[in-house]
Image (cartoon, rainbow, N blue to C red):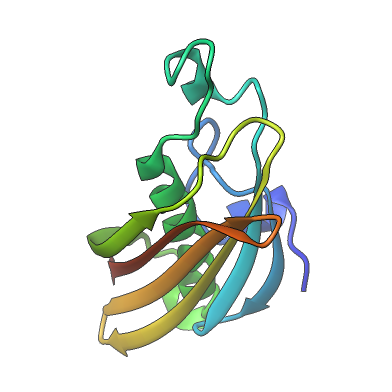
Length: 141
């Protein structure tokens, strides 16, 4: 299942400039998702992070993983119209700089759900090289 921007916007409430995923290449609602964020020179954060050496902020890569995971959870019919809020981040590791021209592949597996609370295991990579990994917890409201 491939979803473009309009289909993603029908699932999650994020909008430009804070919609941070471009495409979904695989989706198993409530279970796992693979998405892509194409890193462009004109992305808003590069104006100040860092002039002359643009690098995607780590916290925004965590947000990209969270948005990808949110599409998996909010695509379930019983969650339509809800919002996924961060509950926590555990064991975040940043292993590689991500720069303009990179395609960041975002993979999130939902590993636990209890009521409106869940946990996702996320990995973001470029050309098969791990850039970020983290366990992300969320609350659906």
